[in-house]
Image (cartoon, rainbow, N blue to C red; front, side, top):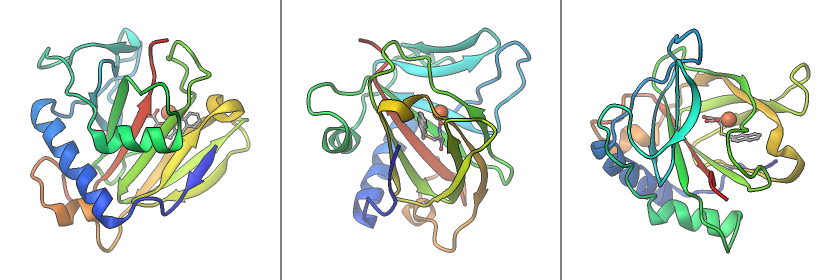
Length: 202
Ligand code: MD3
Ligand code: FE
């Protein structure tokens, strides 16, 4: 697991937020629910790319269409594909881009592993924007490390860290949230957005 903590400058973050606003205008945020019990997550999500990650009473899965609009997901923007090529892989591009929106004061994400992808040797790239996240991760559920992920941080997972447990304990407001500065109606005030690029298919 590699953290690049101040990786993206303000201009690049602004460009990504603008690209995300176009995705969200076609593919609005929705609230996933937990398998079996069907209770709502404390975050909202949307996707871009051929395959979008969703969760509902039936389980976690990658699907071709938005569960509410039933339309195909928008394309992954070049601004994000470029970061994957720079940090992850020159040959294969990601086919999935999950957008997590932390918009409530109590938004969080429980400790889990990412293992719904077909080939777990492919890397994962994550980008943090907006409010800070207290992020927890580690090989063992019972002894997790804690790190503050600020706007512009990149997190790269490959090799042995690919199956690490991880989650977001809480969100901390910041004085100047770059997402608020951009002034798009689709993003609530003081939110955090995390983007996760993955390759689902072989
Ligand atoms: C560590 N999202 O959507 S991505 C997720 O901040 C998710 O929203 C987090 O975990 C968020 O599944 C963080 C960072 C990440 C992604 C994949 C990993 C960390 C990982 C795979 C293995 C270990
Ligand atoms: Fe995850």
